Image 1 (cartoon, rainbow, N blue to C red):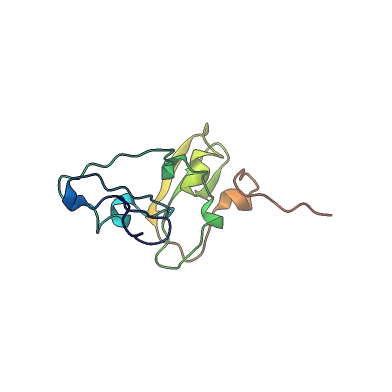
Image 2: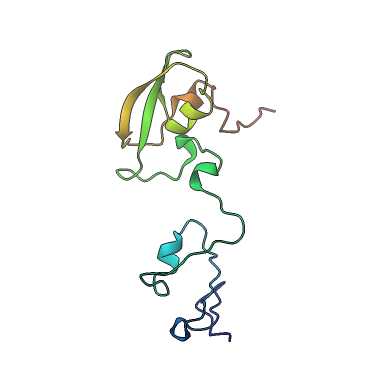
Length: 134
């Protein structure tokens, strides 16, 4: 039996009270499954995932210079790249642009006053696309 929809992109099938499975489609990107289904899941519920799952760690890395910035809220760990001899390399650039370099932590979980990454400043960043001069 089909039940009433529970919001955009969600469809419930057979109420849980009948002992039958209740299916919902999770469609909100970036919102945890348990948060989306908090009104439906109960202790002892079984979650079966069908289809592709993309973890945040599998998503493309973004340089801190390009992340939506909010002063006092945004945080990153900065590194020193001893190979390139620069400080203030964000964690995304440290893992991508400077992957094979000698790195040391410069500032851990820092809340900067602006979206800073010196990897971009020194033109070492492969995550930020530069505009070509005409």
